[in-house]
Each structure stands twice: as structure tokens, then as C-alpha cells.
Length: 406
Length: 86
Image (cartoon, rainbow over all chains, first blue to last red; front, side, top):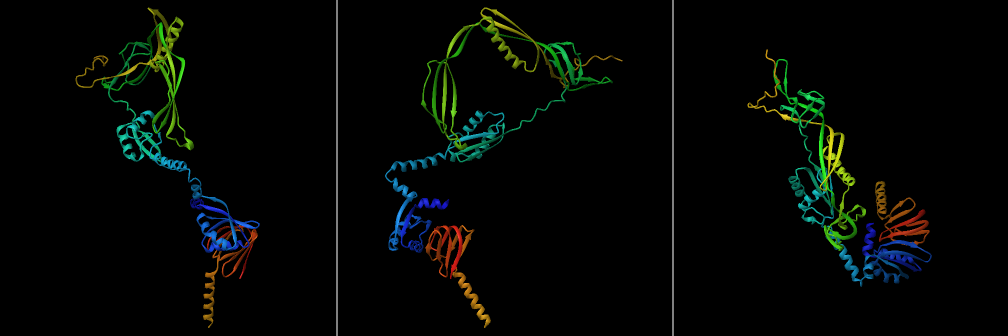
């Protein structure tokens, strides 16, 4: 391999030797320290190869040895340069290619971020950009140690970070900081009260004295499990009451919309804009526009990655769809359908901790406004902790059940 | 007297070893000769090399001189026999 490269750089000649005593030619080359290789014998001559510079030197001596030399082919870099000596463009192109490779290798082509869990990739890209690491960043000016340190100081959610720059590829490895779990307060005294009105279905008391029975109704703020325990001697002891109180509750919600609606719908008019992105810079080369002021666009970025190497060049295509405003008047059915969709969203988000036993919808139409009244019967945990003050001014009598005097 | 003769003989052997070519044979496919003084005959079935003190005769099929320098050469091909003419 190395020898082939050397031969290519120096240039070599394949030639044939014919004459009465071709062995004499071999001995002449040996005496003049000329190297021959690939010597093949044929019927009346033999072929061989030697360096281009040696061939010029050995040619007159071969004439003296009574053999005839005939060039079969000239190979190597000097031959190629001689062949293309008048085509300056090729030389300039080759120089430009080498120069562009050298210049391009001074910039970051692609960044890969691994280890993100809670922090979004876009957010991390912005942070890295603020600290000088982005596609197209000048590599010699990067101080990856300082960058990692600064990002870790700035963003507390990042516990560990390392930036490895290999060639023009930057790999950012991140370990997010482990958040310590919240420790439940199980020592400070408190009561368990009802968050809302309802009928108790089940009480799962872990600590404290249950004050209401299952099946009884409670109102908002009513004491359910007391944090004051009284023992056989009549001594009161403050505890951290903890209970899960499942109660049947009623929830009401209303959703409304006007019967006249304005909708933005795609009108079929489309446009496509294309940009060439190079080292983070965008050069638009195909610009189209739509007449409508309201548009929705969808952007695709195509980045070539031959052999897994992401190149710093890509095509960004922006598909723009024009929207036009349409007015429509809702009838009862379509209004109910739309409002029920809103109600289902409400159930999914606002009532996600409840088990909905039944739901009832009622639609009303007044003054051009449709209103959907929804009533839900749910089973949910209505318990909340209400701390008991323990300083000397706290009056504990409301919490203490009256005891008989002996 | 005997000791003197032995010493002279050993000295002659040493000098002849210095003058002898170094021959390295890889199977019967490649032959390296260091200390060659010239090629006396080259054909596809036989090659004769002058090494100064002796002539090395290589017989075979499709013999090629892969590389020739001022004092060494490599013959490759199917070598059938190797003989020496002193």
C-alpha cells in the first residue's frame, strides 16, 4: 500500500525490453541501482516497470546493451500533472477542494445530544447556542470544559455534562440531576377534613380517630378524621391524621358557544418555500407566497448523512397552506356535539382523579348562545390535611370531644 | 600443528560464509536471494543467478522477477527445483 503510494507519487513507466540478450539489461539496471519490478517474460521480450526518473537515466545505457526499450504506459502523479498541465481549472478545483475541506473542518457540522429526560432538546439547543456551541460554530474558539461547567452552573437540573468534539461532530452527553423524593410529613399533628360536599363511601384511616360513619353525608370543611387521640386514661395525644376518604360527589360544569361561528379552513391554495441551510445559515432559493393573511405551515428539514456522517448542508422545505375564514350557523345537533367534545376534554383534564359514575347533559339555547350544562356523579378522594396549631395560643377545645366528669 | 590447521579451516569457513548469498524460500512459490551479482539467464521455466561464489539455478513454471534491486531479487512462480553450480 505504502509502496504503491510512493510509486504513484514518483511516477512509473511500464515498458518492454526486446533484443538478443535482455538479461544484460537487467544487470545494467542492477549495477546502476535502478529498481525493477513486475518483470514478466514473454516469447521474445520481457516487460517490466521502473520509476519514471530512472527510465530517463537508463534509456541510453540500454541502447549500448543492444536491447530496445518500448514504453507501454506511463503512470503516476507526474504523468497526470503533465497530461493536464494546460487545464488550469482542474488544478484550481483540486486546490479549492483541499482548501474547502481544511476550512470546513474548522467548524461544527452536527451536534448530538443524549441523556435528556425532562429538559427538551430545543431548550438544550438554545442553552448550548448561548454558550457558543451550535452548528457552524468555530471549533478552535470552543472551550468545551468551560462550556460544560457554565451550563451545569446555569441549569441546576443538569447534574453532569460532557462535550466531546470529534472532528466536526460534537457529542453532548447529559445526566440530569436526580430530584430527591418528597418526604411525607408524618409527625406534625393535623386533622383530615372534607374538601367538598358528598356522601362517604369508604374511609381508609391510617392514623387518627374517625369521626363520621360510612354512608353519612359531609359538607365542605367538616372534620372526618381527628388528629387528637384520647386514651383510656383520658389523656389527649396529637397525631398526624392520615386517611383516604372516598365519597360520592356531584360536579357541575357548563360550556357555551355562540351559534354563529367563524372557522379558518384550508382553501386549497398552497405554496412551497425552500431554503438551503449551510452551517446554520439559511439561504432561500425558492420563494412562493399565498394571498391569504392566515396560513398554516409545515417545515421539513432534509439533511444528508452519508455513512452516518451528518453534513452541515441541508434543504429546508416550508409547506404553506392558506386558510380562509368561513362563517357557519350551528344547529342544535352540531352545537351539542361540539359542546360535548369540550365536556369530554374537561372530564379528561379536570376530573382525571375521579371515577365518573354517571353524567347528565342538558342543552339550552338562549339569545344565540348554546350552553351545555353537565352534571357528574363521581367517586373521589375528598380528604385534605388541616394542620393543628401547637403553639401555646392554640385553643384545642374544638378538637377535643367532651368527656364525662367523674 | 593440528590446532593451526583447524584454526585456518575455521577461518576459511567463516570467510566463505561472509561471501555466500542469503537465500530465503517461502514454500515453493517465492524465492528471495540477497547478494546477487547478476542475472545470467531469465526464462519462464528457469532462472540462473550469479552470486559470485556460485550460480543458483531455479527451475519451475511461470517464473517472474517480482522485484530487482542492486543486490537482491525476488522470484515468484511455481518453483520445482533449486540447484547450485559451484
